Structure formats: C-alpha cells, structure tokens
Image: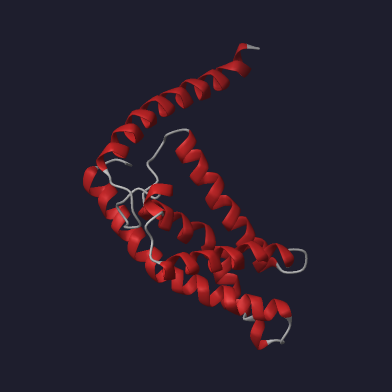
Length: 173
C-alpha cells in the first residue's frame, strides 16, 4: 500500500516546490515589467487598455474567427484543432497566471499562439478547403488561414524576443 502512495507524495511535494518557486519568480517579475503589448511587457487588462483602435478591431475579428470554428467542429478536423488550440491557449495561460508560475508577458502569449494554433493552421494549409469547394466552411477556413498567418508574423517575432530574453536571464519571468 505504501508503494502506491510514494509517487503521489513525490508528485505533491514537487508541485508544492514548483508553486512556491514559481510564485516568487512571478511576483518579482511582475514588478520588473511594465504593462503593454510589446514582447517584454505584461499582457493584462492594463497593458491592453491603450492599444490602437486598429489593433483592437484586429484582435476582436481574430477572436470571432477562432471562436466561430465551433460551427464546423462536427465535420472538419481542422476546425477541431483550431478550437482546441484556442481553448488550450487560454487554459494554459490561466494556469500560469493563477498558479503564479510565470508573468504573462506578451511574448509568452505569442509563443502560446504559435504552439497551440500551429496544428490547425498546418491542416488548413495542407487541405486548402477553398480549392475543393465554395462552401461556408471553405470561406471560413480561408479567412482563418489568412488571419492566423498574419498574426503569426507578429507572434513569431514576439515569441523569439521572449525566448531570447528567457535564455538571457536564465529563467522564466
């Protein structure tokens, strides 16, 4: 019986150490970075309050396109992957913030976009639904592909800046 509980205790102790260390790191990091949309700025409500109107409209349109993937998940794998990536990004981001494991810098958010949206994006690029028919899904898929591609231009830049910063300071801020 003790054999069963050893891995559980080890996992709990490890989780406690990670949470305690992560909390100290995140609390310190939050004081070091100012709010804003830059790769090394804290991405929170204060950071997003002063965005240019064009960027606010772009982000809202991107949200609508990604959330609307729910309309196509029953019959289209790419829509499932995009919805899963969209939801996963928020779940992981919320966990990082709530457990204070990292400061949500815009570069970290960009990195999560790249990681979680990439499978759906690749599927859309490979299958190219607009080349097969002119359905509502094909039009939506084309719009999603273009919007994610444009977002990736900025996300790759910000993710690279963030990763370079993490490597430079030797820890996750």
